[in-house]
Image (cartoon, rainbow over all chains, first blue to last red; front, side):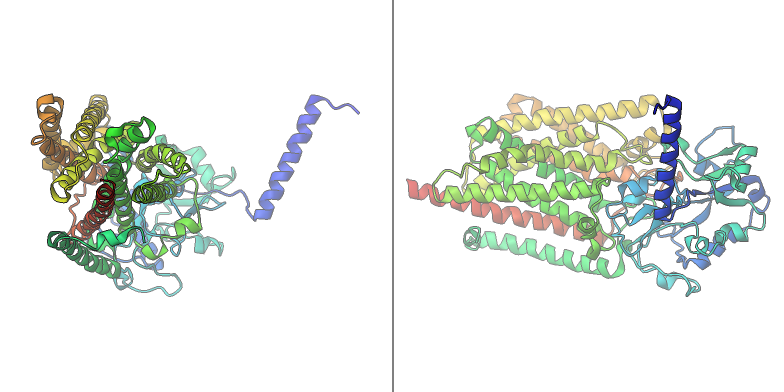
Length: 241
Length: 390
């Protein structure tokens, strides 16, 4: 029996796909990579709106510390220029405008690379997760994150929680925390809370690996930017400007 | 046990010194207990400057620990007999410094009770895991070497043959601890200040200047207080090592300044500006940085002039100047300025709080106590052996 090179390659390719598929079935993964597109002009249309932050803070028992040095932040608003860097005149329209920033759920997360206990790790679906029970509080991830997306509990956060949500864990002092893309809601097939509550529908959440998803359609149709893409972290949050 | 009987006999001055150190340690323990119950919010660290005095002290002291190689290598590898008396002092200094390093990491943990998670979930891609491996390995090697060689000396027999490969291994190991410590910082995409390939060489150069200058001071103190002379020649050779290392260190700092300032790239330029002239009105480290620079220049003048370097009245002053200059550079400025500006372009100043300084001082006191006790043991053994053989 003789096999041409083309046939061999085709068979090899098919076997690889089957193998890879089998492997991912075993792991229960579905090849997703969650990401988000933030439509900045839509968000800016309601400059005083804080719905996404408020909903997130309340749902995730995020403590409210007034001292900026002790703040815990998952999603918050930052100046365009602070998030994207100095642009001189290019960003005249945006410079001081506030837009939402959160964990970028990078494909190559520096925080995961440096964590000495794997207390922060990358899930198969692209979410950068935190295990608050394993974290030793060394804050190496905070030094590593180029987006300032991580917060540390400098003291017991519980007394500073405005209204306790008993459906979600609280944290102890001495651990790092950050946005988890509402993995607790994704598990119930719900969208992240910030996406759901946004009155402007400025946030689009979806599977970056699915070419037919809403998020990929947006990325095809509109020009977007990412924060510090030159660092090679491959951030999963895109901004329409 | 480990010749500890030598440490419990001493003069009134010896005990007063130990008592003073113990008092500082007790204060530090109280402060640490408050930190343990309240959290790291008791320190001056913040969301933006998330490492401070503790990690900076750790970084500086890894250098002191690594510097033992500057006496071990010439003595064991090149058979430099002039270092026969000072080598054990270098090794005990290394043991004390590594212990201090580990304590500084420990007090910096938000959840110190979980620190063994690093061993429970060994993570090969984390430099902190490798730092733990290299530091504890270095502690073990030096403890073993000094115990074995000193015991042999007490029995006036040559040390066993098997210890030699262990000693040889400790030489590259010393280089590794400071290289890995530099890798903690030099591989972070978001921290341009530390993103430099000369960080590890610079750490080694400053270590080989700062550590041996401390060793010279300790050896001179041992001569004065404990009647133990390591020999003029040993001090002289060591001062040459300090000179070369300090010159290389200053050279490497100038390289950093050139690259950061001439390129004009904001993320490389800003931390340097923050250190040397202040950034947007924030200038808490400026006096420190300039003090360090002036001390470095003074030290070079003193060290590079043979007349000054070989004068045993001036040399201690030169060593103090070197040590202070490097302590400020590495133990204050380098770590803190790496966090300025923050990834979101915020400038947050950092100043250590009283509890934070008390805890740090207590760890230094513990190091001083370890050095005192170890030197007491080593020198007593030597002096007893000397009396018997005469």
